[in-house]
Length: 276
Ligand code: PXL
Image 1 (cartoon, rainbow, N blue to C red):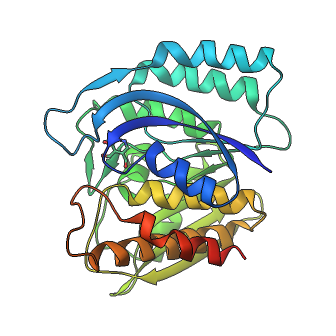
Image 2: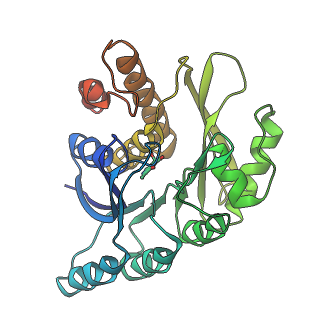
């Protein structure tokens, strides 16, 4: 069985980050170790959330694992709690990167044109350092614009997305996948670029008329799980897009669904079926 480590926060309630990554990656038949970057009472879309930063735990956990000669088939990072822990996460990559394993960075920090409330304007430059060490990054359009300095647009054409992908690739990662891309009404998906081969690809699924927190984490977790299950990047991204749509569909079909996250639990059978 493949083993990965996911480095992101635990939002105790809110259906995002580790509470999404763990069940999804486990359901996909991949072992998921974790390093929590912080413990929050909820995700940061709630008012008055608590947050205990765990930066000081990253180094000691890494040192213990090194002493035990443990390794990982992938390292997947998401929400990092503060700019102070960027150096520790980069040091973790340096310690655990091998010729064979994969570093996947979801540069979680912003959406809909705005930084998340916990981050200052200097955070994107720090996140760019994490992206520089990745094999694959999966930003949304807002994060991509903050990482590259290119303007954030809600109306655009394929040229703009290609420019964005190339600017992201200049940060360092071989593979770049931009999420939340839409060229036609009713369709939403992902466009990606392999800077080694110069090839582009894309996949579009149904654009349901709703948006929920945590869908980026559902997408990235599914993509990592699928890559570990031997799917190509294109197939992994397509499965991630399809499962995310199924999660939103399940949420919309449940009258008592929560406002703060998707009912990814209800769509797990779909995900497992797709791996058969
Ligand atoms: O889903 C991304 C995410 C992860 N973790 C925390 C968040 C968010 C988005 O708002 O606040 C703590």
